[in-house]
Image 1 (cartoon, rainbow over the protein chains, first blue to last red):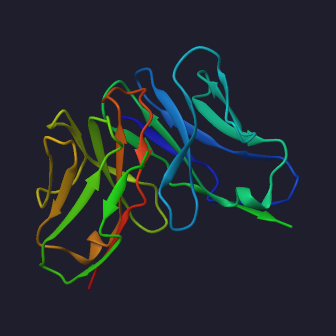
Image 2: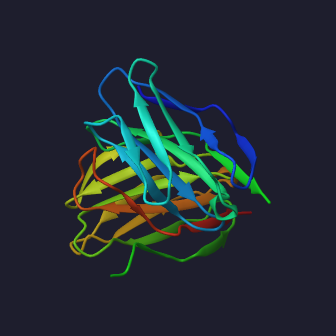
Length: 112
Length: 114
């Protein structure tokens, strides 16, 4: 069975500082990996995903994540955060089937 | 184009009652999934429907059921409500049902069971 562990429940960071949100997964088969963002009182929005190919994937708003198969990790990074990045971030894993497994989430709090 | 829509936005029920939640997918999407998100946790997979057939079920009791209609909209039904069913219920749609498909989430229905 698959599982996802987000190692930090909360990450406070100052504006314009870099940030890394950590995600580890376990699976006995090949997986697809996703990062979603959830703003207060809203549904989830896809930030980026890894399906195959280049292990580094990027989003349009400056986030990137690197798939590391040997360490079974898919950490999310941004070199310089903004106040508007304050939100809950969820890492998720999916195999070829229909079930998506989400982590417990990491609350990113960007301080001025 | 409209995104995924869900109704109602909020709902208050008492223990033992029944509830029906509704979801309309993005036009052209044939797959709908349902998730339960308890406060402070990540979404938990409940069901996926593709082309009106159930294709996946999570670890939820038989009190939870769903269906998908010919226009690809979907309903989630929960019988004999318990306090622990209080949560945000999210619907997501995708073009197909494959593992790499992007899922688009609705804003959710917040259910409170008293």
